[in-house]
Image (cartoon, rainbow, N blue to C red):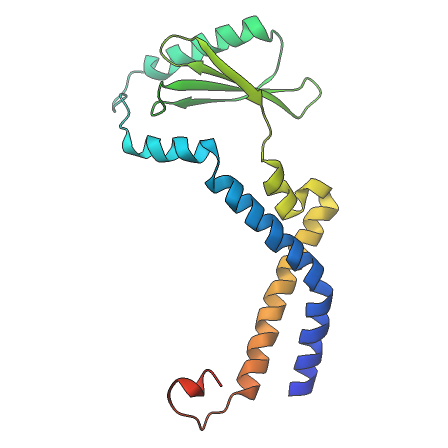
Length: 184
């Protein structure tokens, strides 16, 4: 393909992809800032410095007892609710058991957090498999077609990169020396 042909394809793909790439860039920036400034990130940073009290080989009761206490307390609050998953975190302060509950008809509902040592209820939060900003950034918030468009704008970015490199390579001036050979 001629240099003019590459430029034409690059320009048209770039023009069509620009709104989607701008959307991906803005939502990515917002999601990144939200992640960096969240309380969860601060808790993860602090947890990296701590060492768990549970050491291997650990007795089965090191996990089963805290889970049993948490499930018993959760049953008192939300009898009959489907349990999606259970997470035991020995490094948090205090160690916790998180019970993720679903809705009877499917989907995510709530997460209940209990003290792993005492079984005491600490707090409840809304539970979503992925945060809204993550789903918005990927296009998933718009359903299956959103994922298709998200994949398409990712592919468009790759095509723009490739066509841009082809144009750059075709326009380079190989007779130049030093950095001017690359940056003309």
